[in-house]
Image 1 (cartoon, rainbow, N blue to C red):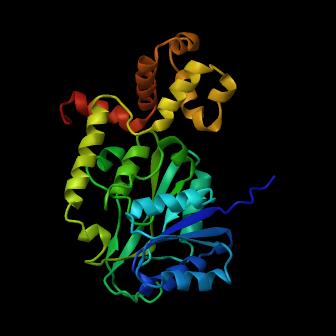
Image 2: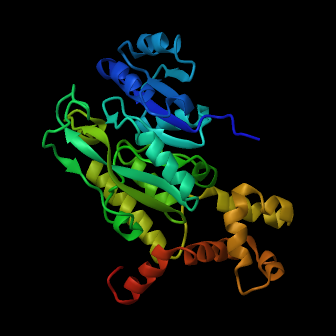
Length: 325
């Protein structure tokens, strides 16, 4: 049976971006796999006329959804609304002022298809300061390229290098919830650190998009950006030092569920397969594990999940050499 849902959901948050929204939609609809794309536009109480423009596009493109809130929200609250309303297998954020290579989504989706153990992929981007630029208009010109680091979770604990145009699996939200919507400009960094506690990412070393640098962007206009980043890094470093996985509501749900039902069929559902596998690999008997009280079982599960990741083994090695802490 074929999967009839869209392959990719592109989430577009807009606030006073009337001058960019048509270009954004044209860019997305020009993707090489546009027929497998769902676009969800979340109008966060904009004072401009993005809604009229989007509704014009909807007349020709039924794969565009439009949601409007009366009050302005953080970009992460808007992303969460869009993700919850979306149906695609893979998710990407599409900033109204950024542009993509015509096959960017196809390249990223293929990487996720071919690497089922990878939760998120990200590519390099060209940099521009001109609102009207596109990758096509810049062909043959010398332009700055933001070449991101290859995937390294320990490096992510020091800085964010995922870039503005990643693509990730919908299922990570089942396990880790959604973006922390109280953050102003670091909510994506926090979420990448959160899901990378147990999942790996992959860097595609190709220029897949164009990033417009603007002084009035949410990222650059936030005076607390550095403070947000430092608090996030400190929180996840502390979690790693204590051998805990944080902000993963599914672990608590899992522990409560198996203490109540001990139903293997339920435990082995898609949502809990990762945690059940970690339990099954333990030297302890499964029955003795399930007999633990909730607090000990939760801590045990944290440790087993972390032990199964390569980054945590390297973290422990560096910790033992007093390079971390």
